[in-house]
Image (tube, rainbow, N blue to C red):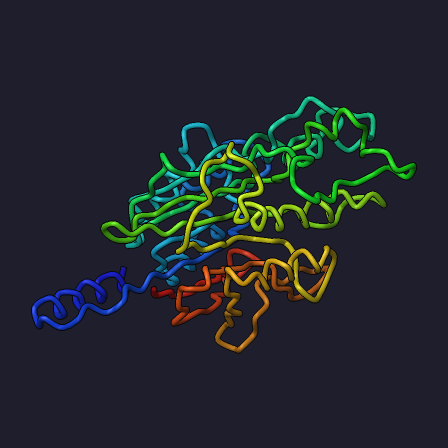
Length: 344
């Protein structure tokens, strides 16, 4: 809100003075909050109790970031959006109101009724369309100070994996579809969600915000199911911008747009198909700033098993000008909050 108040004062000065209006600056941020809980309703309970130190630290990080548009990962989804509304209320009480929000049911935790990992057991978290103990575990949400045009949002969450051009679906050791041909035909690609959401940043001016949270490219076997899924979740965006997904999802968003979220892939370190991530980072339609924290470090998460890695990204369309960026470390999450300021 401090930046918003300063911007309003500057706008008033320019209007009164009759000078040429400067370009509008918009701050975008992405933050894997790691607020997800192990059962339905538990995050809502903790938000309402106002005694959870992790939530307090996550909220403090969001308030410090002062973003205009914020993508959040690892926020549990519920049908009536009570959890997200409770989070908005806590932020408003902390002096950081976000009047507009967007969320939809993710694939995470949604039961498939099938044995997706081929271990002859049903009903496990890995048998959901996206890993999860319950429907909506570790979902996504968007918060905004600017109006969200939800009616025009494009939801790619239900796209079937085999329909993606040049997909990398896994195979069994004898070269057959994994875990079998019938299940391979119905597998969903998105482990959580993929959305393209238009936000009205000024009269007659929309910014398309594309966001996702890809599966970690680990916790699988020699079939490399999760590594391949992670790669195709990343490459989905290029196929989408190419218009290669068909007319089912409507017209391809035109610039300006921003792609942001947790790709769960570092361009140099750890597991994962590096060529998929590098294809996205080098796409000429996008720019790929490398935000840094106050020490000059560019990693966005620190995991015990791998150490520091860069997995959270904000990639604005190439005609947008990045005038600032950074990473805020948080005591509430292993991930830092990544932000950029853009102008057109």
